[in-house]
Amino acid sequence: MKILKGLLFLVPQLVLGADSWRGIEYPMNRWGISVMGVNQVENGNLTSAGVKGKIDLGEKLGEVDLNADFLKPQDLKVDADVKIVKVDYFLLPFLNVYALGGQLDAKVKFNVGAPTIGIGSSTLPSGKKDWHIEHKAEGKLYGGGALIAGEYHRIFTSLQYTYTRIEMDGDVAAKSAEVGMARVGYVAYREAGYSITPYIGAAYQKTDSSISGPIPVELEGVSNLNYKFEMELEKVTPSVGIFTVLNDRFTVLVDYSFGDRETLAIDLGYRF
Picture 1 (cartoon, one colour):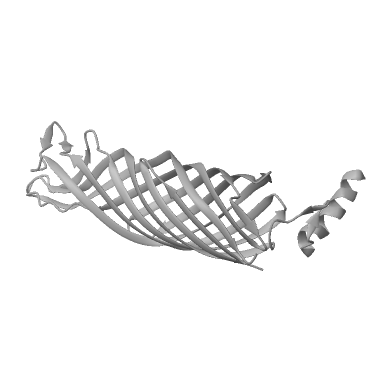
Picture 2 (cartoon, helix red, strand yellow):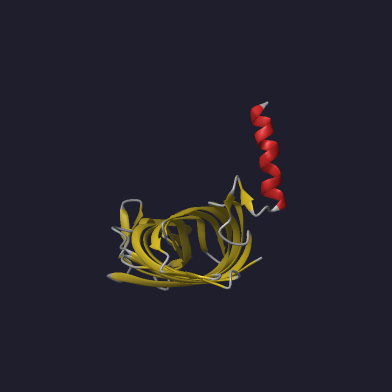
């Protein structure tokens, strides 16, 4: 019965948008909408690489399937630009949840050593020492997450987690992306609805993706030659940033992660 009474007390607080919860005031207006631009450059690892195609073995044998595995696929570089719209809501003074959606433009570059193409007991050379491949694609993403934050004597801390699905046009398919952020900052200035909070932190990101497309190499007797790579991007990088509130309504967040993954994000928001 006590649990039921607690839930009956909590639901109106969450739904009706009260100014406080158990005497704790909300840090700002509970609803928010923002637009974000992100540029990210990252080095990742190819977990597997291979090719498929057709090869003509002559009049007697005809055309057969061709399969190959790359030897020691090398690291790859991903350069992505993301545009996001986010809607968020403070469920509790220290708990913010949000949903987001947006557009992604990506360019992937990678080098692979010459593959060994096996057909029975024989092999087919690629004709090149290395293959240099560049792939461009665009698509959309959607997802959501939560942020837990608190402040004590102007010291600000937060933990944030975001999960997104990415659907790319063409042959680049990211299955999922997970991003975690931990921040510690100090409210350097606060007066009449204005505040400035610089911070330091750490950012974690994991993305599992696959890339496929045609190989721009002509080989005698070979047709429909295509590659497919599985890749994994997983990094923890340091970050710095600054969060500004203007007139209790407008927010500006600038965040920069550096190291093996470089990310610059600018978020412009409005609270209501």
